[in-house]
Image 1 (spheres, rainbow, N blue to C red):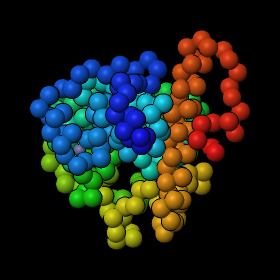
Image 2: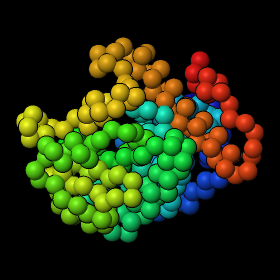
Image 3: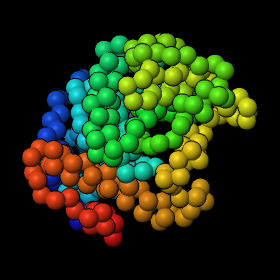
Length: 265
Ligand SMILES: [Zn+2]
């Protein structure tokens, strides 16, 4: 029996303390299961063999936190342990297409998870969202990092403005980069283009240049290297957050040494 088969036979399980209300719309959930969108599969707690779940194995849930219409899961290609994505369960290509209620809910979940990441990793957590033809399912990335991305963008991008909440997103905006820092406003960069370089903003690349603690394999790395990187990062994320949750819940067992984290082998 493969790991995926084994996972299908299990009762859905969640990270400690997480409960997931039923799907917002049964027809939508059914359609999501039929649709070959990886993010829809990640966002549906009843799917037990999503790409991230397969990285983690059956024993740990990918669902870090959830609300009625949104979930937070480890990023598939995490830049660092703690890199999460907050996804609406509804398939939309851009945050702009969500209702005000959905945006408020997504922001609320992102802020809650962000606070948890800050406590666990003891560093600022950048929130990032993008819309362009390459993004098929809207999401907000949360990355614990010291990268000065807001300052970098402000120095290079003439067309940006602040919004205090995701509900302030314009309804129609075909391409943008949205960056939020801890307790600050969101900075909305219209167009998502690096005007000085004359090309689309490569946010992943930019973050790794601004913070050399963030790592990812070289673009031409072999698939096995990528798979190992993905697996280790996702597993460390879940282990770190789970350990922190137990610790803050009153379980005063000493923290495990870093080299015993799940997935290091
Ligand atoms: Zn989707």
